[in-house]
Image (cartoon, rainbow, N blue to C red; front, top):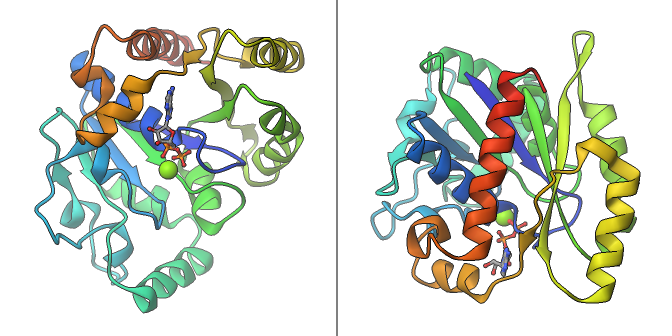
Length: 255
Ligand SMILES: Nc1ncnc2c1ncn2[C@@H]1O[C@H](COP(=O)(O)OP(=O)(O)O)[C@@H](O)[C@H]1O
Ligand SMILES: [Mg+2]
């Protein structure tokens, strides 16, 4: 099992979109994929379909000692298993956050107890910035993917994200590996300049493929489908496929 957490300092950078599509593309390559939505916005369901209307179960409802991840796991029509955040109301959310606060590493233990196949890939989607979810995700993860936009505001959040990773990221003695995905790249000069600055600062930790800004990414969401399935020829979809190959090659080589 490999656990990859998708994180960001800012909201609205494309984490959920990228997580869903990475998962779908990995499943297309034959890996058993489980996507876990750790964001109270509970938005992963809109990318993956497969939930009945009014379905409320999810990871945030698994607060009893005996609860297992499988109890809240759904199968997406796009080839992945997924665990929504769930919608148990505000009191339940607070109960879940309290449990995550007190029981470290709750998520890692639950994932280990799930006994997924050796080649399984687990993707953890998270809310932006510091939170109990980010902390649990970093502790559970073997690798972190940070999503940033090709804009000046995202560039200015790099030190903040690096600090969060190093604060939460120490597991035994080995620091968890990480790489940055730049999303919504464009031909505009400012976007190009920011990408150059990010590359300069991060070197090999910047994923060498920039996900293009594309209206079809938004469109796919409107149809509640991952863009990899909705428009496989779309440039952003093709870039995500390249990122998957880059990532898998690196993880096998011990990135
Ligand atoms: N490459 C892209 N091109 C165009 N729109 C995008 C792209 N990536 C994400 N979006 C749009 O940006 C919005 C925020 O994306 P989302 O994945 O929900 O971000 P986050 O999870 O970081 O908050 C969504 O409306 C999504 O469709
Ligand atoms: Mg999101």
